[in-house]
Length: 178
Image (cartoon, rainbow, N blue to C red; front, side):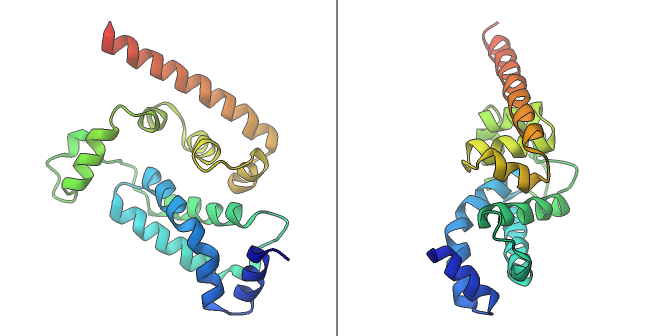
């Protein structure tokens, strides 16, 4: 039995220490993922907290057929959607009283980066699939499970997402130099 399997079994038996050890290695990646899905740092922290609480509450529903990380990211995706407003902090929101200097600095530095372009060019599910594949290095099968989609859907939409992002980045480059 692997150490992760042992921690899962102990967490299912009620061990808080085992659960803490289990999720600790995923905390940073989950938070980074949630930062891209939430309006600001505080919302991402709230979504992470909700994800970990839900994972602890429903640990007995975890099915070892899937990787634990897949199950955990599926919970995170649901929490991010639940906690997210329709609007995203943009550079135009600089006068907003709700966003602080850190939010403005992040928005300014991210304005032209790859994932900001992806956010603009792709729909929510394709963006999530690409993030899970290229940032979190998840397998196609695990992404399909996390998004509750077929493997075929995942492959096709990763390809479409790469093409759309390539077109978006090409257009931005031509606008910048043209």
